[in-house]
Length: 88
Image (cartoon, rainbow, N blue to C red; front, side):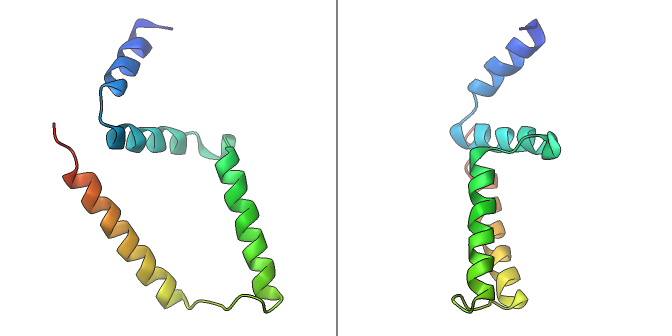
């Protein structure tokens, strides 16, 4: 491991759990589609299952308006916690 990488690792490990999670998400996102984790694969499988249920009439549809409203609330809540939870 290079000295720079070791410094970055040590600095990252000194962050709070939430800060490390945010950094990890940013780093993984920067890899693009090259990395598909087990969690990603599980979500894809879940989405396909739900879509099949919808096509078979076993699951009701949700309006785009409701989906985006829920996403906005979720995003705003998460951003509030990210911005206010840093104690350093």
